[in-house]
Image (cartoon, rainbow, N blue to C red; front, top):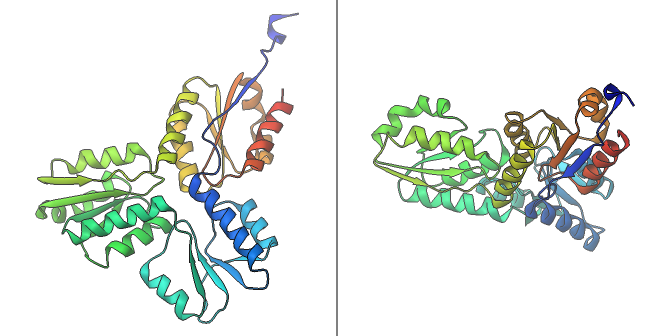
Length: 296
């Protein structure tokens, strides 16, 4: 056999911490159970329960609707998703005539509570995260019940616009969107440290996110190709892909069908590792693995 034609067998590895985290699994299972126990009642979710098209389609087929907007009048049960909501939204859901079922992730609840505590203690609050992400919107709204000294930023560059305000305040408190990158938090801490005398940092990145990122980084160091499976709307999934792109060749796909767009990369790679976001169901991950195995 000619050396040019010789091809090493592919090694395909799946990350241990890939797919549904505790909060997402709890949300999906609870909503399904809620519908099974209340088949005649209207069950709806304010927004998408999780950032995954396949799961949302499955819930829709079961009669669990996603509401893009809260109606003035409604009936049945309205679920608050794992990202959480502001106190005002909880009140509006009840006023509309719904029974509220709160499925805010316990880790997100902890961030909200810490943000409230820091606001009450007169810290200038910095929320590290994406300002338009539903989790961050809810954290911000909860903190602003007690203080207007709140700013959201996902980079030191964004915080520079508030530098004079931050310098005037003696105390700065920091909380973090649960799915943020540790590198973003570190960058912001480095920027804030010289500005004030008292800096209170609450690293509220959830353990699942931290473990997922750490494991994926180690896999990437020893891989020709990293594949990240999950929704492009999912913050934790996109952050995962961003981190890994700095280490090795990385592609972010939503389903196995997108692998057809990367046939050359897959063909050239001998060691391929697969990870997935916290809102990616097992069946999506399994299909990705199966398709990769078929490519050998």
